Amino acid sequence: MLSLLSPAYDGSIEVGTLPADWTERVGRRVETGLLMPGSRRRANYVVRSKSADFVSFAADDFWTVYNVGLNDVELRRADGGHIAYHGSFTRWAAYAAIQGLGIVSAVLIAVLLIPGARAEVASYGGWGWPVLISLLAFFGLVWPRVLVVMHRRFASRTLERVVREAVAT
Figure 1 (cartoon, rainbow, N blue to C red):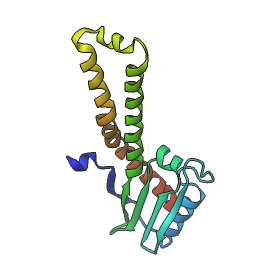
Figure 2 (spheres, rainbow, N blue to C red):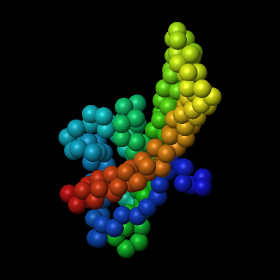
Figure 3 (tube, rainbow, N blue to C red):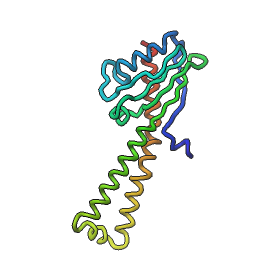
Figure 4 (cartoon, rainbow, N blue to C red):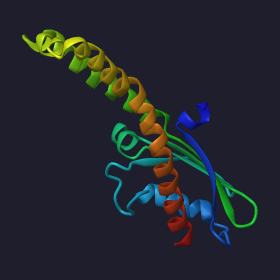
């Protein structure tokens, strides 16, 4: 169950014949614009480490972490024309949790401070407060984890697409 909720993913990308300079190609793609070559706007990544068989890169600013979620990526030569990868989006997950708690806090503060808001919640009989607290708990605690589970698939697919494009050029 913990691996299901983990903001990390592993996999392997089949690229056929792996060029000798594949790490250089991936590094160039990272430096020129990971998602859209020629544009680093909101996708600002830096190469952290590179050798003939390994390359790692990471998001370099808040907006890249928050918008894309490919926070830390490691690529390694594997057998048979494959590239093994490990990626994580821990910072993205933390921002999602912080945002969820921020929204929940704002709603709770508004309900408690806006004149008549408490009475409006109470007007739903015995269900008003339990429903509100349940919704706040869901969106503050559960929803960020649901986003992590959903995002893992998009992050790995995006990484695979980018690596295939980079290695092919």
